[in-house]
Length: 248
Ligand SMILES: [Zn+2]
Image (cartoon, rainbow, N blue to C red):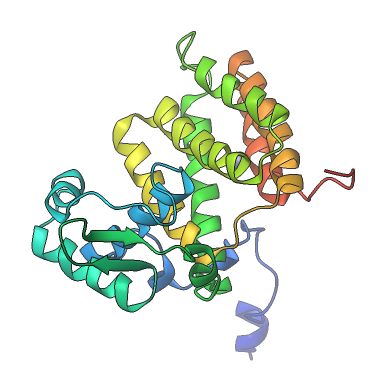
């Protein structure tokens, strides 16, 4: 008599090795690109502007019509999104001749209340997958000179002591990397991810940006050499980088 369990084996028996799932993106609803509404897009793009210092706390935002055109969504959606951000304390609405919508002076403190570890981990994991894919796809095909701007950012990060400038350059590096390897459309996709990260993840400390910057430098070196495996390893090392122990 054939024992079914013996014939087919216990189901828990280890099968062939499979790649480990990317733990943080097991929950599909956390995946970026799924369900990002027009309103979320406005929030993330305003956050990205603040990180890139194209607006600062206390500054007036462009008019809703201008934002709508830039983002390719309706003006009414932008207005509703800005209203929601005012209610959350991220923006201030001022009436009168000098009125408009302003970035709240205490933007950083308000954002700190929105930090969300699960969403941050999912975005981080997805961004890692995007960069690994871009680097694997682009290694050996990047024209000469395309990486020069990225190299300049790495050099500036090495020299900068200003925390806000370091965070700005760190974010700019990843946007420009996406564009260099994937084109303007992929830059927009990376902007969606990075903008959302600005709202759910504390901004990296200078010591961490410096540690990551060594991975940036390694990545550029390997991309120039056309060495795909080491280039992908540099992308992964970036995610696992820990702050330098040396004084900052
Ligand atoms: Zn980086």
